[in-house]
Every structure is written in C-alpha cells, then in structure tokens.
Image (cartoon, rainbow, N blue to C red; front, side, top):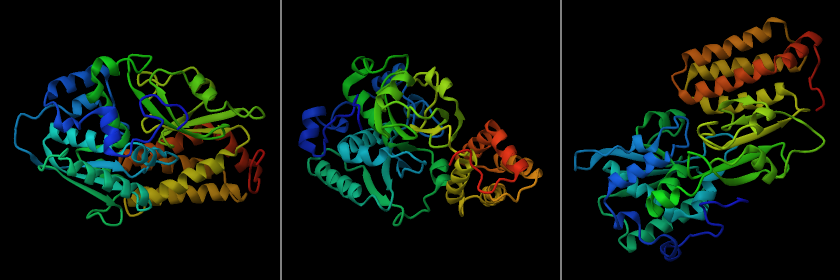
Length: 382
C-alpha cells in the first residue's frame, strides 16, 4: 500500500493498539442498529463482490429477536485474478475484521461465522487466531458467537465460486472493514472521506504495464488520472492498448475512457478493485489465452459446460497461434463464448466469459489478421 486513506500506515495487530485507535469492539458498545443502517444508506457503501449490493439493503433489520441458524461467510479467499488485498487487510488490522464481522452477525442475528482462507495463508491464519484469542480473553466477543477460521483444505464444504454465490450472507474483507469504520466514526466523520456522492475509500490492486504496480488506497471520487500518476504513470515508450477491470471480470476499456472517469460507484464499478494495464505491443491472443487458462482452473469440477467451453476456446486460439487456423475458427470462438454466457448458472463465470468475448470483439482485427496470414506464434512485437 502506497497511499493511505482510512487504513493506517502502521499495523494495528494487537488488541491494545486497536483500543487506542478505535476503543472497544462494537459488540461491547451500541445496540442502535437503526442508526448504523441509516448511516450506510446515507453514505452508500457497496459490497466489493460480483453482486455489488448496497450494504444497507443487505443488513435490513430482522424483526425476530432469536438468533437464526444461518452461517455468515467471510470471503478471505482472494478468488479473483490479480487482486491481492486480503493478505494486506489481515496483516494490517485483524481486529478490525473481527470487530466488523461480529457486529454484522449481531445485526443479522447469525451466531455462526466461518472465515475462509487460502491454504497458503499460513501466517495470516495465525494472525487471525491470535487476534480471536485476544478478543475472547477480554470478553469482547459474545458467547452467542462461534467464529471459525478455516482454509480450503479443512473446510467441510468444497470452496469454489458457486459456494460463494449460493450462500446468502457472504462478505469480503474490504466491505467488512468499511462497515467497521463507518460504525466506529459515525456518519458525519465518514462523510469526510470521499470526493463524490459515494463516500469511503477503495483498495485498488494495480498491475500490468504501469511503472509502480502495487496495492493502493484512494478516496472515492479520485480521478483515474491521479490514480495513474500516483502509480508511477504509464511507460513512456509504449501507449496503452486497453485496461481490464475487476480482475478480468469486466470488459476492457480504452485508456482514454478510463482517464475520463473517477473512482466513483456512479461512474465506474470497480467491484474487487483489480485494475490491469495492457500496453500496445502485447498480443491480445496471448492475453485472452492467459485469461482462458485461469477461467478453466476456476470452472474445473464446477460447471462442465463452462469448462468444456473454455477448453474449446483455448483449442481455437492455440490453432491460430501456431498458424493452423481456418477462417471459421474466429466465428466458432465467439459462438462458444456466447453459449457459455447463455447456459452457465454462475454469475461469476458469465462475467468472465463476457470479459473474454468483449476482448475478442474489441480486438477482432488481431485475430482476423493472424488467421488470414497464418502467422506462427503470432505477435505484433512480442
């Protein structure tokens, strides 16, 4: 992280430091849920996932006072391509995560909380376990709650994209921390963060052909011209062909279109915060092939139609790359992706396929050139 807005530059990794910054856990304080939900309505905090729901609508207060049997899922799984924020959030402030999620569970009257991590997040798992032990020792978490910390290897269900899509209450870490900030500081103070009608901050994972790829945090409303400048600007010797959003879950846009926008939910929906720059010299066939490889991994044993469809798309592009393609391969490639979009039940897979299709259509001239000229290992420059 190079630019700090809400998140502290220093790690708040023990409960004493956390109390210095934030005071007691929210669970120990107010039960005024209506004021919290009204603050969320006023500031319009959106979930940073594929559904991008308004958090206030998700947290509409239940009338029943009895805790229900649902499980609240914390998605710290980093399933998106080229998005790296989960590890930072856990290391930077584990108590903010526990504080926010326990209070969300209290509002929703859910007693069981499952935090799901990648299997290689060993250090992060230790940090969360220690933070949980510290909070329990000080009675900061109610005995009604059972907070479980799992990784993908020891959870009792298969962790994949359909798991996160099919559970009703799933929260990503950035949404949890944004909620905790607004609950602690109040609507008036939170309203100071943001340069537009949408308040708060966004953690943006910037990658690709830019001089200083990294995690950054910006206030809502910051222009993408400023974001590019703070990220070190674009390489001078190359122009940018396109920019991908949301870890290849949204269609690419031109650099001119991006630079005319601001980081604002009203102008552009950045979902998970993934932003990847592609320079002019890159072969879009190879870029699409890389996205397809990742899409196949995601759909393995999840959606047979999608997996076979992405596999077929990979076959067509490889035929083009080795100079063995036919003119109908481009049309077959496009139609296969349209079939995936039509038939898959997964919103995530549908978005991935739509991103690939939009990229192919946007740069169709490269595909047609490669097919017509039978150029082995086709590339303009590289």
